[in-house]
Image 1 (cartoon, protein in one colour):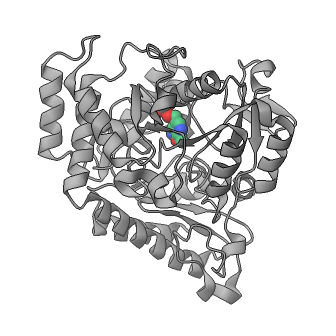
Image 2 (cartoon, rainbow, N blue to C red; image 1 turned 30 degrees about the horizontal axis):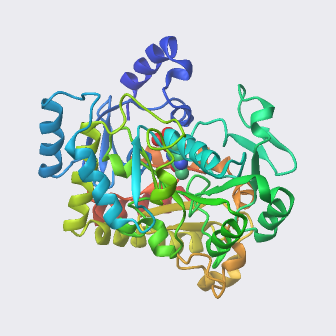
Image 3 (tube, rainbow, N blue to C red; image 1 turned 180 degrees about the vertical axis):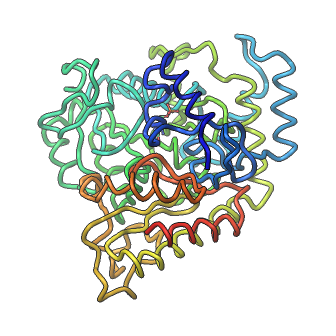
Length: 448
Ligand code: PMP
């Protein structure tokens, strides 16, 4: 496998871009990232002509894969050739808004923005503006984009910025708690209940190895926020239009948040974010309300066309059956491999998401038949329940360094492109095939 062209491009990039990349995680690929020439179905081809089975899928947006159906391509091209954007409304924004309102239980109104980060920034400002309160509760290990209010580590007693450039005084308005820990949430509400604007959480932690909510956890968050006049915000940037199909994770969980943030799939592969929710709250955004929010590119017509056609295609074809079936094949194949070869590891995921977490303390070789069959949503009757990661500390405790060796060494060498580290999850697309699944499982078997 030659990589001369990627290497030369990386050298050029290093001299004009910090770390040679435009998003921090991309540089995690060692010894340097491969540069992509083009996508093809469920695969990408790099600048040296190497072809990889791609389970990264743009980090989530590409539900349909790299080869878009003709009708989706046509809609994007038609919109682009009508001039890219105008700074005044277009019909297609209304069409996509209506589609989302029709399908997602909690969404009565929606505002489109340009990234998941912008969506969570705006949702937090909206929650603060609507409630007149300052603090937000977040989950340790949850990711909500590169923004000041959520790049916070530590715990509710001692929150601290997790990046240089964020004042400690900002971090003090953020209260991180462990996921799946009801007592910790009760404690912060006992202490700060009157000043908590919102609890902001991914329905499933998808940026920390994939951690499922325990039964009843989101119902509990729904109740305690309502009781204290705080908002519940689901960050569905990853799970939206992936878990639970067009109804998103909230429809599968049966919990209706006040606000939902979207990104990724809703823009069909183009830059996007959105904040949806109860009409009364969303109306607090300017110009109908006092919470300022604006953007030159927001509701960009090409993005709206790509998002709408992608979702319409998914509504009219067996997209979710296909990706979820392949997801199940990957998870159950991986579960068997792990049971045979690395019984302490845990396979997580649901629908079209999957990940192997290098947990250290699985049930061990005596109970191989008890390895979980996945997508269990932390079902307490599962014999492996005790070993599933319940929060970010459990994932952090895994052999995260092993990712480098096994995945950058051994999976990439077998032409399989997996996510950059132990924490980011992996995605199945409509373009993936059973052959891709079989080849990937074979590669895992060799690598593990
Ligand atoms: N929220 C979640 C749950 C995410 O996974 C991400 C990005 N992976 C973001 C927000 C930020 O989105 P973006 O990278 O589009 O700014």
